[in-house]
Image (cartoon, rainbow, N blue to C red; front, side, top):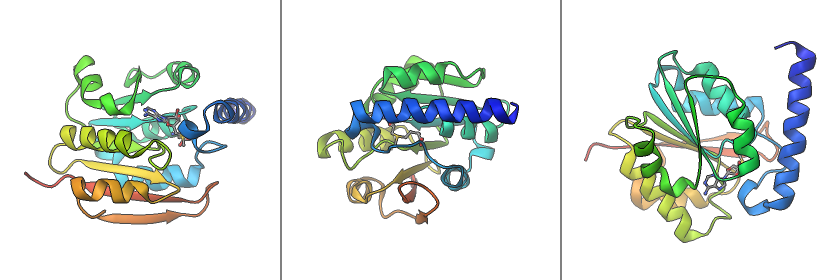
Length: 198
Ligand SMILES: C[S@@+](CC[C@H](N)C(=O)[O-])C[C@H]1O[C@@H](n2cnc3c(N)ncnc32)[C@H](O)[C@@H]1O
């Protein structure tokens, strides 16, 4: 994509993102999309380069989605579950046969995977805000993640606050890795868990 087209797209994404944040602050939880720096951290933690099937929870305007698609092998699949209709429309405009956009709630992850006839994911990447969604919803999402991840599969969550760590600890154990990504607004923690053999 030429530089000026890319810049215009980024600008449009930022405007849509901010508008949706103003309408749904607890769901969107950030005023601008994730930075390239944060995207890089997340891709590395989730080993997207070697994944065959990735799930993204909360694709937003698609910056992180495109970052995953840039890394994903040609035969890979990416399922994005996004709750917001406006964001889903932008995600559906990404022209890539590996991408499946599912409008729905992350807590229905298991059903979404089954609906699209997809295999168990190697990685689940999540930017949905565990700090504002409430304890019960957060627990349902994490239970769904636990139920679909095969042994060795990883869950990578980038979050401003630490709630996800407390919620996930009883299910997924202590985070194997926590990194701080400072070059983002706001600065984010990147948590990574790996599903242990049963
Ligand atoms: C912080 S934004 C991240 C957007 C994008 N991935 C990025 O990093 O720029 C959180 C996203 O999660 C979505 N979201 C929030 N709760 C959700 C839920 N329960 N299920 C699916 N998507 C959700 C929001 O609509 C929003 O797109």
